[in-house]
Length: 166
Image 1 (spheres, rainbow, N blue to C red):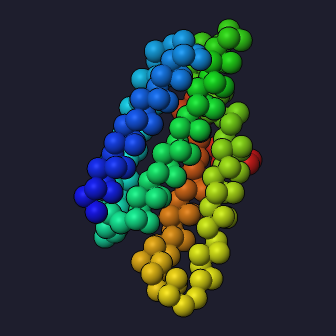
Image 2 (cartoon, rainbow, N blue to C red; image 1 turned 180 degrees about the vertical axis):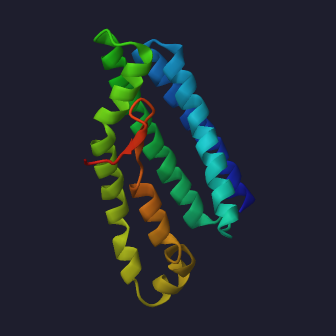
Protein backbone atom coordinates (compact mmCIF):
# COMPACT_ATOMS: atom_id res chain seq x y z
CA UNK A 1 0.00 0.00 0.00
CA UNK A 2 2.82 2.38 0.84
CA UNK A 3 4.43 1.63 -2.52
CA UNK A 4 1.12 2.40 -4.26
CA UNK A 5 0.75 5.71 -2.43
CA UNK A 6 4.38 6.64 -3.16
CA UNK A 7 3.84 5.73 -6.81
CA UNK A 8 0.72 7.89 -7.01
CA UNK A 9 2.54 10.80 -5.38
CA UNK A 10 5.51 10.45 -7.72
CA UNK A 11 3.29 10.22 -10.81
CA UNK A 12 1.17 13.11 -9.56
CA UNK A 13 4.22 15.33 -9.21
CA UNK A 14 5.42 14.26 -12.65
CA UNK A 15 2.01 15.02 -14.14
CA UNK A 16 1.88 18.42 -12.44
CA UNK A 17 5.37 19.32 -13.69
CA UNK A 18 4.63 18.20 -17.25
CA UNK A 19 1.28 19.99 -17.27
CA UNK A 20 2.87 23.20 -15.99
CA UNK A 21 5.62 22.93 -18.62
CA UNK A 22 3.10 22.42 -21.43
CA UNK A 23 0.94 25.35 -20.33
CA UNK A 24 3.99 27.58 -20.00
CA UNK A 25 5.22 26.44 -23.41
CA UNK A 26 1.92 26.92 -25.26
CA UNK A 27 0.52 29.98 -23.49
CA UNK A 28 3.83 31.63 -22.65
CA UNK A 29 2.35 33.11 -19.48
CA UNK A 30 3.40 32.31 -15.94
CA UNK A 31 0.02 33.09 -14.29
CA UNK A 32 -1.93 30.14 -15.75
CA UNK A 33 1.06 27.91 -15.05
CA UNK A 34 0.99 28.84 -11.38
CA UNK A 35 -2.78 28.42 -11.17
CA UNK A 36 -2.69 24.86 -12.49
CA UNK A 37 0.47 23.98 -10.56
CA UNK A 38 -1.23 25.00 -7.32
CA UNK A 39 -4.68 23.60 -8.14
CA UNK A 40 -3.49 20.00 -8.61
CA UNK A 41 -1.93 19.43 -5.15
CA UNK A 42 -4.58 21.61 -3.49
CA UNK A 43 -7.40 19.55 -5.00
CA UNK A 44 -5.75 16.29 -3.95
CA UNK A 45 -5.26 17.62 -0.42
CA UNK A 46 -8.91 18.71 -0.16
CA UNK A 47 -10.05 15.38 -1.62
CA UNK A 48 -8.06 13.45 0.98
CA UNK A 49 -9.57 15.63 3.72
CA UNK A 50 -13.09 14.96 2.38
CA UNK A 51 -12.38 11.23 2.12
CA UNK A 52 -11.25 11.27 5.72
CA UNK A 53 -14.33 13.22 6.82
CA UNK A 54 -16.55 10.67 5.02
CA UNK A 55 -14.78 7.82 6.78
CA UNK A 56 -13.20 6.49 3.59
CA UNK A 57 -9.74 4.97 3.43
CA UNK A 58 -6.99 5.29 0.87
CA UNK A 59 -7.30 2.18 -1.28
CA UNK A 60 -7.05 1.19 -4.92
CA UNK A 61 -10.54 2.57 -5.65
CA UNK A 62 -9.89 5.97 -4.06
CA UNK A 63 -6.43 6.24 -5.62
CA UNK A 64 -7.95 5.50 -9.03
CA UNK A 65 -10.63 8.09 -8.39
CA UNK A 66 -8.03 10.69 -7.45
CA UNK A 67 -6.05 9.94 -10.61
CA UNK A 68 -9.19 10.33 -12.71
CA UNK A 69 -10.12 13.54 -10.91
CA UNK A 70 -6.69 15.08 -11.51
CA UNK A 71 -6.99 14.34 -15.22
CA UNK A 72 -10.41 15.98 -15.33
CA UNK A 73 -9.11 18.94 -13.32
CA UNK A 74 -6.23 19.52 -15.72
CA UNK A 75 -8.50 19.26 -18.77
CA UNK A 76 -11.11 21.65 -17.36
CA UNK A 77 -8.50 24.10 -16.08
CA UNK A 78 -6.75 24.15 -19.45
CA UNK A 79 -10.01 24.84 -21.29
CA UNK A 80 -10.89 27.56 -18.79
CA UNK A 81 -7.50 29.24 -19.06
CA UNK A 82 -7.61 29.12 -22.86
CA UNK A 83 -11.05 30.72 -22.81
CA UNK A 84 -9.92 33.44 -20.40
CA UNK A 85 -6.91 34.13 -22.65
CA UNK A 86 -9.30 34.43 -25.62
CA UNK A 87 -11.46 36.91 -23.72
CA UNK A 88 -8.37 38.92 -22.72
CA UNK A 89 -7.28 39.00 -26.38
CA UNK A 90 -10.66 40.57 -27.20
CA UNK A 91 -9.67 43.52 -25.01
CA UNK A 92 -11.74 42.73 -21.92
CA UNK A 93 -10.43 43.67 -18.48
CA UNK A 94 -9.11 40.81 -16.35
CA UNK A 95 -12.13 40.47 -14.03
CA UNK A 96 -14.65 40.55 -16.89
CA UNK A 97 -12.55 38.10 -18.94
CA UNK A 98 -12.48 35.64 -16.03
CA UNK A 99 -16.22 35.91 -15.37
CA UNK A 100 -17.12 35.68 -19.06
CA UNK A 101 -14.68 32.82 -19.62
CA UNK A 102 -16.15 30.85 -16.74
CA UNK A 103 -19.75 31.42 -17.80
CA UNK A 104 -19.01 30.47 -21.40
CA UNK A 105 -17.72 27.02 -20.52
CA UNK A 106 -20.10 26.28 -17.63
CA UNK A 107 -22.51 24.17 -19.71
CA UNK A 108 -19.81 22.21 -21.60
CA UNK A 109 -17.96 21.50 -18.34
CA UNK A 110 -21.22 20.40 -16.70
CA UNK A 111 -22.08 18.07 -19.58
CA UNK A 112 -18.55 16.66 -19.59
CA UNK A 113 -18.66 15.95 -15.85
CA UNK A 114 -22.14 14.43 -16.15
CA UNK A 115 -20.93 12.17 -18.97
CA UNK A 116 -18.05 10.96 -16.82
CA UNK A 117 -20.43 10.24 -13.93
CA UNK A 118 -22.82 8.35 -16.23
CA UNK A 119 -20.00 5.98 -17.18
CA UNK A 120 -19.97 4.75 -13.57
CA UNK A 121 -23.73 4.04 -13.34
CA UNK A 122 -23.22 0.31 -14.17
CA UNK A 123 -21.31 -0.02 -10.88
CA UNK A 124 -24.69 0.20 -9.12
CA UNK A 125 -25.87 -2.95 -10.91
CA UNK A 126 -22.93 -5.23 -10.07
CA UNK A 127 -23.68 -8.62 -8.56
CA UNK A 128 -21.67 -11.34 -6.82
CA UNK A 129 -18.10 -10.85 -5.67
CA UNK A 130 -17.71 -7.64 -7.69
CA UNK A 131 -20.66 -6.11 -5.84
CA UNK A 132 -19.26 -7.08 -2.46
CA UNK A 133 -15.80 -5.70 -3.22
CA UNK A 134 -17.18 -2.40 -4.54
CA UNK A 135 -19.89 -1.90 -1.89
CA UNK A 136 -17.82 0.53 0.16
CA UNK A 137 -17.36 2.66 -2.96
CA UNK A 138 -20.97 2.44 -4.17
CA UNK A 139 -22.50 3.43 -0.84
CA UNK A 140 -21.55 7.15 -0.97
CA UNK A 141 -21.29 7.30 -4.77
CA UNK A 142 -24.73 8.78 -5.41
CA UNK A 143 -24.07 11.80 -3.20
CA UNK A 144 -20.61 12.28 -4.71
CA UNK A 145 -21.96 12.14 -8.27
CA UNK A 146 -24.59 14.68 -7.33
CA UNK A 147 -21.93 16.91 -5.80
CA UNK A 148 -19.72 16.66 -8.89
CA UNK A 149 -22.54 17.40 -11.31
CA UNK A 150 -24.04 20.29 -9.36
CA UNK A 151 -21.12 22.66 -9.94
CA UNK A 152 -22.25 26.24 -10.32
CA UNK A 153 -20.63 29.45 -11.50
CA UNK A 154 -20.91 32.39 -9.13
CA UNK A 155 -21.01 35.87 -10.64
CA UNK A 156 -20.34 38.45 -7.89
CA UNK A 157 -21.53 41.28 -10.15
CA UNK A 158 -24.96 39.73 -10.53
CA UNK A 159 -25.13 38.72 -6.86
CA UNK A 160 -26.59 35.33 -7.59
CA UNK A 161 -25.70 31.85 -8.69
CA UNK A 162 -25.98 30.96 -12.36
CA UNK A 163 -27.10 27.39 -12.78
CA UNK A 164 -25.39 25.52 -15.56
CA UNK A 165 -27.72 25.09 -18.47
CA UNK A 166 -29.95 28.10 -17.72
